[in-house]
Length: 304
Length: 240
Image 1 (spheres, each protein chain N blue to C red):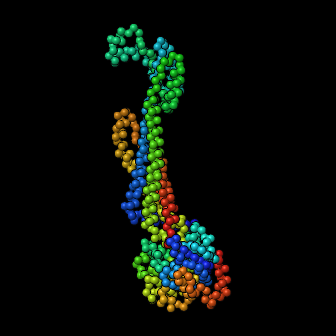
Image 2: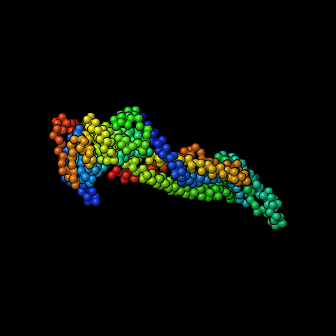
Image 3: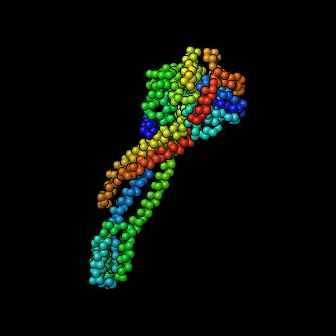
């Protein structure tokens, strides 16, 4: 068991040594893997950040409730009280029809026209601020539907449509990212596979000798699998670095944009879990690419 | 130890390298395989090492019928045979020590045991102290001895050599042959393919002469070698 472990460790280190003998070629292969994986990683970051940012805005969503015309102000004030009782409502602003008309006359510039009106065409209105923890799109819909069912309520205006649209778009992008990640994953396997295939061609003599003195297919394959492993490790680290650079470059302008919108939103890099996933999948792809190629091509290398 | 019964070998291009070849090499025997180039010496050695398979006939090596050795069992089969090549087939980017240790590493021998046996094998071929040299730093004769050390390091029951002295001057050839003789003395079955007349004259051992893929002399083991004790030995070693 210890001999077995020692052998594997030696092969692992040996494979690294062999790769470091051809620094430029190794670096180029790792760079290709890194770029291929940095792309989906960056798109993933774009989605998670966009979701977080839109989550912030979601909380800022209010519900405007317009009562039917003819509802008396006293009744309207009762409704305000009833609204405040709800556990999902944080605050309620009441805008009486007269106050609304006065403000409209003041700001719209239609003063004379409004004076010509015999009665107030505006209804009483309520602006409902939901509590932050209930500010999900689903719950806001539910709250709006509840309020809509009240007999004195005319129109409930919920401005979550754009949030829903954004989420739908993000969903579509997420699938695109998955698709791209899948394709690029195949690309990584192809790159590693091709590199390993060339490596097998270059080391043909060595493989033949090893088979002649009794080396099994698994034995001659092992160093190539470890090469694939190292390509994955290197490629994964490069992908992580590229992603970190992209986040670093975008941090300042994104902060500025967020500041302009009065938001304290901060762009987020890859957390440790995403980092592990990135490097882990790079390693798995590198290993798998070399496994498939080495298994296939090493069978063809037979002493003659 | 090596038994051929009516073995034919025909290559895909139609060339018949061996035809109707029957041969018996006893355990512990040493024999020359002679003949002109193209007579079938290399083909026979390739069949014994399972580099090629017979087209027809039976070949039994160390008690195993090669027809029953599946592809996945070939490596284990080869580990019981030591092979010496004319062109040494050393790995030039590895030290002498690593070259000789290769069969032991493949077999999964422990590190301590490897060191002991590699040094013992190098000692037997007179190269102790050269462990850290690279093959190209050695002379051709020394490289050939490294090849021999690698072939015997895992103590195989059979040692086969294909023109092992082809590139060596007469003096070195005799030296290499003497190394084979010493292994034979401790019980290893040795089969050496050679057309080196000088060497054949110096070593009066059994000669199996091939011509056009057929045996024209020495098919039967020399009577003095067929002592009953060694024949029993064949059966006793039939399961490796």
